[in-house]
Length: 420
Image 1 (tube, rainbow, N blue to C red):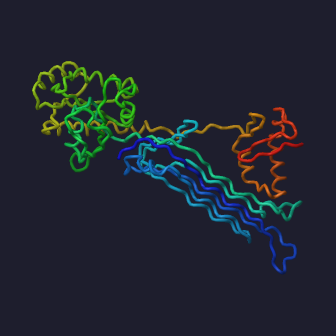
Image 2 (cartoon, rainbow, N blue to C red):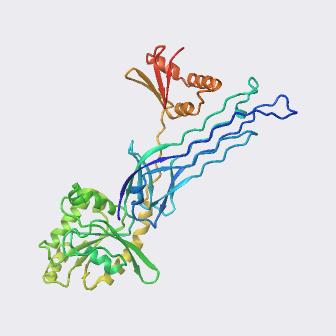
Image 3 (spheres, rainbow, N blue to C red):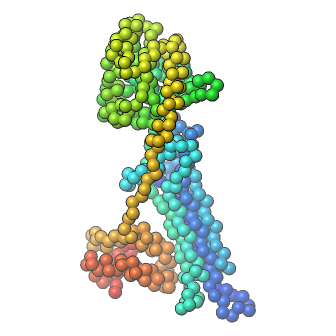
């Protein structure tokens, strides 16, 4: 089953908690802190796999969580890091943040990896907080929560050649003739409702991937006939084979068909309208095909290579496929230069403060991380958090927003009562 869109939830593993422990050996009367650090949580990693062709796996499993880090232990023993969770996705998958729409990754090359949710760092044990003024700290950090987010996934098939044309022009028959693909073939429009991929072998060494895109109709750029669902799969191809019903067996004029489809490609994405293409004048075994071929050559022959073929009988397909293989070799270098560059993430402020329904909210990854990693039942740890909040300027910002003693402040999942 073919699925090219999915929405999933991912969460990096939480870091392990730091340990509070003291040395207690018989002959060490003034034993100091001996608690180890927690281990780091595992990351969520996407890896492109050219062996996958659909996002169907993400339809039935939508939640992914990496392993959390182990807690620290006494004798200054650190916890083990949590294992990363590697998720395989088809090459050609775009991954966006569901909340912001930001493009996180464009998985183009086989084996390409991207971290979409980082695991939290492990909390520090009390041995890390020893100072000259506090030689026996009784506090440790909790593990940092792993990143979590909802992701939108969109697959754009990676193929060297895309077959375009009106429904029932013979695209499915053509791909079944030149490759091992077995699409559904019948004599009615929209037989193909999902893209099909096939590998075309040319001689002993050359081969290319061809995609049978479901038939387009006038208005496809605006979504007619599921146009948007089909057209985006053409954006990763290098060359189009424009398949025309030269015999006009569906009551349409092949010259008009050619102009209409090219107009739809340009309206959807101007780059598609400029893509190199060759014309497969199909159904040459039927009546009226010869007359229409002459008109087609007169209208388009000076700008496009035209190959008279019959997908039903196989006539002319060898010449078409060998020429396409030659063109692809010339176009391959240009495609490599067009691979999108990595996204540069914007720099966010350390924190922000706003008021809503009488409650003051403090937002920011840094301050929320400090709060989440504080053991609220440990007096020493809470005092340290208060010191951090003051040093970061959060207290001054709250005062400038008009906060009063007794007002509620929310930071992350915790609520506090403000006091001087």
